[in-house]
Image (cartoon, rainbow, N blue to C red; front, top):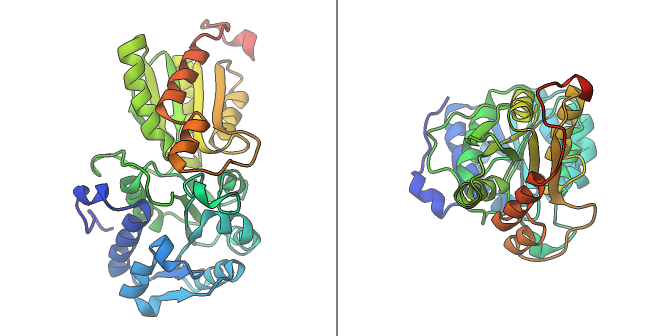
Length: 336
């Protein structure tokens, strides 16, 4: 497997998640002739066009026909190729979702779906282009792996990791103006394994995507100003979820909050809640994301603030949960 990227870490300040993905895919394509790329007339927007220019005989633009996009990808996968399919998340998780489910997931095919403009990252485009339901939809499909990287560097690591990971994979990235979180690639990334960004014993923040940076910043502020020890988990893989990390957080901190640029129904928060409920262990728990409504229109940073997913919102939510009363003892039997 390729080690390192074709760009330096300093480029990450000016390259978007999608641009980094395009560069990494080109590098992977040099080493693995089985990789092919597909687009539904959005090669430039999703940056898979870089792969198409480098490998024109291994790139297919099906036009504005998302159902066909995933059907063709399924057919290519059946021949032993590794299709990387790119379009906007809204078109993947809604317009082409039947083919994702039936053509790809039902047959457990080795297709890698890179969905751009996810969450509220295309906030100014309005409800038709927002995609705040995709994590819930994709994690409900059998055989599907679901990943929401924290930034461009983690996107690169996820793309590289998914090549040798069997079965369909859905990688969710933003429009391209998301801030960098990781300084370099020098950290361990494993599909299905959460990353402890900050240790803590008072409360745990479980995050994915753009909220990881905000939670990390909030944890520093809360340590300095409230003397709180805040654990931050980058739960980049929504499915399979790192249940061990969740249960360790419940045991160690007894207070859990999830943050995601996604509806609070069915996404990261629901996945974490399922694990906690099945364990029979009690804790103070809260989910923060887009409420049960269609997201308002606006710039992503304004929407992040509006829905309390920015650093200030996270700080306020932590203080709220820390004030909750619940039975905090070492005897779990009365809570089962």
